[in-house]
Length: 434
Ligand SMILES: [Zn+2]
Image (tube, rainbow, N blue to C red; front, side, top):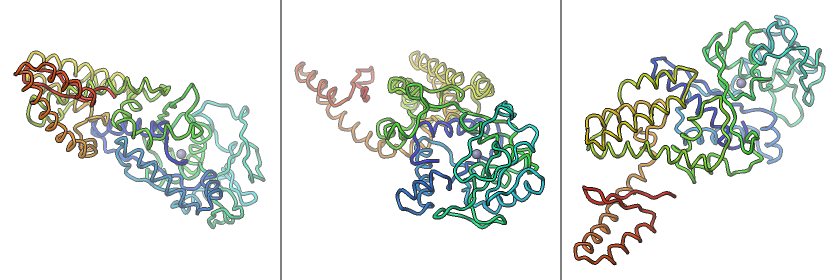
């Protein structure tokens, strides 16, 4: 975890938020763990550079990530354990691994002996003979250069914890195996993460857990990157792609639509044009929702069941693009029903659309988004009264055949960013394109 999250960071969590919502819809009782790496090389480096305590960096990162997830409508995890709160469990795991001959201590470091575990590298399908594992600073005393550090001996000025092998601090991989064992037991269903974590991180998690005696994850779900000009998005791109900046320019629900609806295994090549397309695609869905709510004059609850085609797409390797196509088809059917003045059919389609959008975390009527836009709802009411007042003036001008004034009013509203449509029930206004 580093600094504030950019849209590449939150994509992963968005994918897993949708997966989790889908399992909940399917009736599973989901335990969702998201661990917090609150000690690592980057945190230690940053703390030294800024002359701040290491833990203040960890807390700051955690808050920034949680704000980003919350802004995009991700449900909070069941548990959110921090690495440094689990040193006892890590020491216990290392003790067992050493006893069983899977690990050893050297110069205060504890290494995992990669040759001791048959099946190491099965996830990334690599051959141990081809493996090159670069040693990091201070990683001395390895029996085999491919062994990886679970625990690093203390360096001056760095945070450290007491262990049977002297003071030191956890390497990155160990925390995940230790926390998974504590919160999920010796076997659990799914482990997620970005494709860049498959090796070495996830391979090393598996090695530690299997050596310890856990079965660990039954399935792995790895999401693809968000790229910019073909490169993995990174901190060096600056602030423009930070979630905290992007939500100032784009509605969070539109960002969620853009980042959450491509297939999790497809790369998203970031572009403003694509974001704008996502914005208008979502506007078509939202416009339908609003028209039916207006027409019905009452709340329309989500249907109990999603359409079978939506479920089929979601059940097939979380096929969100296929599922989203069903949303758009249902919206089109609903719009036809509206045009044909078939209120019952329109309401029924809205109920289905809401059920599907709920699974995707994109229901504009959901409390998360409605709550967030409380202020904008109030503002909408105020603007609506003002616009109606102005439109009454325009109607008055028209009725006295003062076309110049009527047109001038319409133009001025247009300049203010409002689009006026004359409908059989009187003029309607909407916000024009930004
Ligand atoms: Zn991990």
